[in-house]
Image (cartoon, rainbow, N blue to C red; front, side):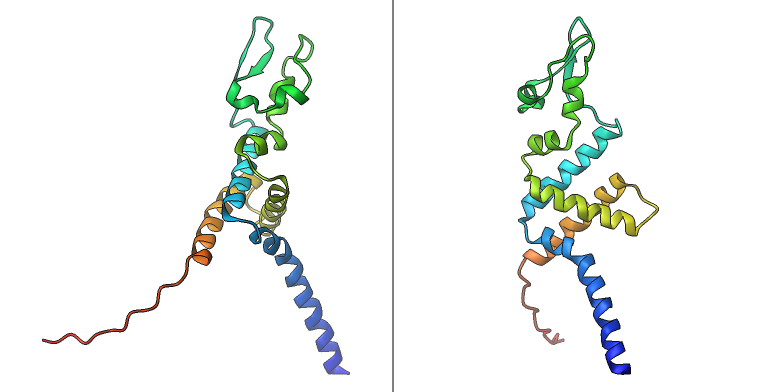
Length: 163
Protein backbone atom coordinates (compact mmCIF):
# COMPACT_ATOMS: atom_id res chain seq x y z
CA UNK A 1 0.00 0.00 0.00
CA UNK A 2 2.77 2.46 0.83
CA UNK A 3 4.35 1.94 -2.59
CA UNK A 4 1.10 2.76 -4.34
CA UNK A 5 0.66 5.91 -2.25
CA UNK A 6 4.19 7.01 -3.10
CA UNK A 7 3.68 6.34 -6.75
CA UNK A 8 0.48 8.39 -6.72
CA UNK A 9 2.30 11.24 -4.97
CA UNK A 10 5.15 10.98 -7.45
CA UNK A 11 2.65 11.06 -10.30
CA UNK A 12 1.10 14.24 -8.92
CA UNK A 13 4.49 15.94 -8.60
CA UNK A 14 5.50 14.94 -12.12
CA UNK A 15 2.15 16.12 -13.46
CA UNK A 16 2.59 19.47 -11.72
CA UNK A 17 6.07 19.88 -13.19
CA UNK A 18 4.74 18.85 -16.61
CA UNK A 19 1.97 21.46 -16.49
CA UNK A 20 4.44 24.16 -15.54
CA UNK A 21 6.67 23.35 -18.47
CA UNK A 22 3.94 22.69 -21.06
CA UNK A 23 3.71 26.36 -21.96
CA UNK A 24 7.46 26.58 -22.17
CA UNK A 25 7.65 23.44 -24.31
CA UNK A 26 5.04 24.78 -26.72
CA UNK A 27 6.85 28.10 -26.93
CA UNK A 28 10.22 26.49 -27.64
CA UNK A 29 8.73 24.48 -30.51
CA UNK A 30 8.55 27.75 -32.47
CA UNK A 31 11.42 29.32 -34.37
CA UNK A 32 13.83 31.61 -32.59
CA UNK A 33 12.97 34.62 -34.75
CA UNK A 34 9.25 34.16 -34.13
CA UNK A 35 9.76 33.96 -30.37
CA UNK A 36 11.94 37.05 -30.44
CA UNK A 37 9.35 38.99 -32.45
CA UNK A 38 6.59 37.84 -30.11
CA UNK A 39 8.46 38.97 -27.00
CA UNK A 40 9.33 42.31 -28.59
CA UNK A 41 5.64 42.79 -29.47
CA UNK A 42 4.67 42.01 -25.86
CA UNK A 43 7.18 44.53 -24.56
CA UNK A 44 5.94 47.19 -26.97
CA UNK A 45 2.34 46.42 -25.95
CA UNK A 46 3.14 46.63 -22.23
CA UNK A 47 4.99 49.93 -22.68
CA UNK A 48 2.12 51.40 -24.65
CA UNK A 49 -0.42 50.26 -22.09
CA UNK A 50 1.44 51.94 -19.25
CA UNK A 51 1.98 55.04 -21.45
CA UNK A 52 5.79 54.97 -21.30
CA UNK A 53 5.86 54.60 -25.10
CA UNK A 54 3.55 56.31 -27.56
CA UNK A 55 2.63 55.48 -31.15
CA UNK A 56 3.95 57.83 -33.85
CA UNK A 57 1.36 60.22 -35.19
CA UNK A 58 0.15 63.78 -35.38
CA UNK A 59 -2.86 65.88 -34.44
CA UNK A 60 -4.96 67.87 -36.89
CA UNK A 61 -6.58 71.26 -36.23
CA UNK A 62 -9.56 69.65 -34.48
CA UNK A 63 -7.19 67.77 -32.06
CA UNK A 64 -7.84 64.38 -33.69
CA UNK A 65 -4.90 62.00 -33.69
CA UNK A 66 -3.79 60.18 -36.88
CA UNK A 67 -0.96 57.62 -37.15
CA UNK A 68 2.03 58.00 -39.46
CA UNK A 69 2.35 55.76 -42.49
CA UNK A 70 4.83 53.47 -40.71
CA UNK A 71 2.61 53.22 -37.65
CA UNK A 72 -0.63 52.69 -39.60
CA UNK A 73 -0.15 49.09 -40.91
CA UNK A 74 -3.91 48.62 -41.35
CA UNK A 75 -5.33 50.42 -38.31
CA UNK A 76 -7.28 52.87 -40.44
CA UNK A 77 -9.11 49.97 -42.10
CA UNK A 78 -10.59 48.41 -38.99
CA UNK A 79 -10.62 51.12 -36.32
CA UNK A 80 -13.24 53.79 -35.94
CA UNK A 81 -12.38 57.10 -37.62
CA UNK A 82 -11.55 59.85 -35.12
CA UNK A 83 -14.12 62.57 -34.55
CA UNK A 84 -14.38 65.59 -32.29
CA UNK A 85 -16.20 63.43 -29.74
CA UNK A 86 -13.66 60.56 -29.95
CA UNK A 87 -10.36 62.08 -31.12
CA UNK A 88 -8.12 59.23 -29.90
CA UNK A 89 -9.78 56.23 -31.56
CA UNK A 90 -6.76 55.52 -33.79
CA UNK A 91 -4.38 56.03 -30.86
CA UNK A 92 -6.20 53.50 -28.70
CA UNK A 93 -6.19 51.06 -31.61
CA UNK A 94 -2.43 51.58 -31.99
CA UNK A 95 -1.99 50.59 -28.34
CA UNK A 96 -3.64 47.18 -28.84
CA UNK A 97 -1.79 43.87 -28.85
CA UNK A 98 -2.93 43.02 -32.37
CA UNK A 99 -1.48 46.29 -33.66
CA UNK A 100 1.85 45.67 -31.92
CA UNK A 101 1.90 42.19 -33.51
CA UNK A 102 1.26 43.69 -36.95
CA UNK A 103 3.87 46.37 -36.41
CA UNK A 104 6.60 43.83 -35.64
CA UNK A 105 5.23 41.13 -37.98
CA UNK A 106 4.78 38.63 -35.13
CA UNK A 107 2.62 35.52 -35.30
CA UNK A 108 -0.49 35.78 -33.11
CA UNK A 109 -0.30 32.19 -31.83
CA UNK A 110 3.34 32.58 -30.81
CA UNK A 111 2.54 35.88 -29.08
CA UNK A 112 -0.20 34.23 -27.05
CA UNK A 113 2.15 31.40 -26.04
CA UNK A 114 4.81 33.92 -25.07
CA UNK A 115 2.27 35.95 -23.09
CA UNK A 116 1.25 32.88 -21.10
CA UNK A 117 4.89 32.03 -20.47
CA UNK A 118 5.73 35.57 -19.31
CA UNK A 119 2.69 35.63 -17.00
CA UNK A 120 3.72 32.27 -15.57
CA UNK A 121 7.23 33.55 -14.91
CA UNK A 122 5.89 36.80 -13.41
CA UNK A 123 3.70 34.83 -11.00
CA UNK A 124 6.74 32.87 -9.86
CA UNK A 125 8.66 36.04 -9.09
CA UNK A 126 6.05 38.09 -7.26
CA UNK A 127 8.30 41.13 -6.89
CA UNK A 128 8.36 41.98 -10.59
CA UNK A 129 5.64 43.32 -12.83
CA UNK A 130 4.84 42.09 -16.33
CA UNK A 131 7.14 44.46 -18.24
CA UNK A 132 10.20 43.85 -16.08
CA UNK A 133 9.64 40.10 -16.29
CA UNK A 134 9.23 40.28 -20.07
CA UNK A 135 12.46 42.24 -20.49
CA UNK A 136 14.34 39.84 -18.24
CA UNK A 137 12.92 36.84 -20.06
CA UNK A 138 13.86 38.24 -23.47
CA UNK A 139 17.49 38.21 -22.42
CA UNK A 140 17.20 34.81 -20.75
CA UNK A 141 15.37 33.33 -23.72
CA UNK A 142 17.86 34.66 -26.25
CA UNK A 143 20.75 33.24 -24.23
CA UNK A 144 19.01 29.89 -23.81
CA UNK A 145 18.07 29.64 -27.47
CA UNK A 146 21.58 30.58 -28.55
CA UNK A 147 23.01 27.84 -26.35
CA UNK A 148 20.53 25.18 -27.47
CA UNK A 149 20.59 25.82 -31.21
CA UNK A 150 24.35 26.02 -31.67
CA UNK A 151 26.13 22.68 -32.05
CA UNK A 152 28.73 22.01 -29.41
CA UNK A 153 32.32 22.01 -30.58
CA UNK A 154 34.42 19.01 -29.57
CA UNK A 155 36.74 19.66 -26.67
CA UNK A 156 40.43 19.94 -27.50
CA UNK A 157 42.80 17.53 -25.84
CA UNK A 158 45.36 19.05 -23.58
CA UNK A 159 48.87 18.88 -24.87
CA UNK A 160 51.79 18.64 -22.53
CA UNK A 161 54.03 21.66 -22.73
CA UNK A 162 57.63 20.81 -23.42
CA UNK A 163 60.25 22.91 -21.85
